[in-house]
Length: 456
Ligand code: MEV
Image 1 (cartoon, protein in one colour):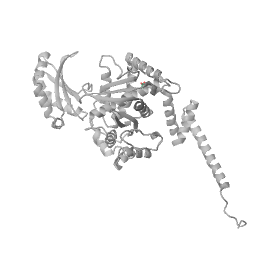
Image 2 (tube, protein in one colour):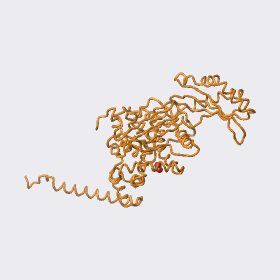
Image 3 (cartoon, protein in one colour):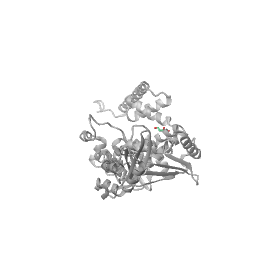
Image 4 (cartoon, helix red, strand yellow):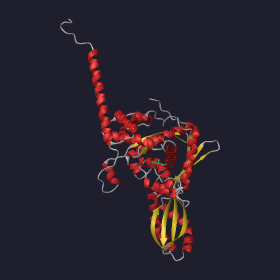
């Protein structure tokens, strides 16, 4: 086994070929795993008692595969990326393209402060513009009331930062929406924000003369953005039948398609979110919040578009960028109570929620590149077919190497069916049994016979 260093921490050569126990050993050589952590991966990932405290009416826990995407090198640091996803080939695709990027390019990230928006809706106001001004004039008091709700957050350097007031014309008449901007530091932030907005309701009614209705976080977290940038030499995509330059041009054309057409943009972004959601889920974060923010951000111009951009840069390199809201945290919610989510954060080695969001953005960008690279070359079905065939082979009873043999045979035949998997499996097992018998017979002939009385 290679000796892990800071420079090759995320290189996991041959990881996919190992048994799960061997993979844990390889991971353990990079990130010390306690017996409890190993158990949380191999034993009971989420104890029932914890599950029972998390939501209502619990009847059990639901398992999902968790894997590691290898080869990520972000801002000069190797990062092992835990991913929880039910779709085959997502982790392999991310790992493969991350390897191309580390060898032929660079992946960097940045982010804004973790500023989330809380919304307070006020209706029934006689003069909305005058009320708006009164609320703005009371900014200092509003921030003070908000910050009294969460002294821990203010101690950590976070807290309410600003107030914005919008007057919305709606079919139900004019209403005021107050935006409370809060730096939530390493929290996802919804709880802190909702508490602050609820605490401000009475004061807002006094200021505005209206009635407060909704007091809730906005998932269009456009003040809390994570960004990633990737550049790669087109030669990275050189392959027997494909010239890298042509692949890179194809990717830019694929991006132009997504830019021009929301039907394509939705699928383009689905590919981005394949990567992001898998890390959001692994770390116990709220993937619905991240999804909502991503798609709302993708439509911010009024037309739904792709979350990434792709172009050929001045030096002929393929350059990709992503920017999206990233309301994820390191503290609170399932991130702290779920043992495997805690372990995922340890594997990632991130020190802040901002860093976590940046890694997620980087994974989304790489995942998008991986999808487009397949789409502009051989298409995604070939890779999917092999994995699908493997799943069919396993459900027909094949295990380990045998599953690969059965799957490959079905792919060669272009017939991926349970009944065919059973037939091939029977043949493979019979052939293996025959081989074992032949070897045994040969060995019994070759091995020295026990001495008979005549020999003595
Ligand atoms: C499949 O899960 C994701 C893709 O459809 C993404 C894309 O089309 O860009 C392959």
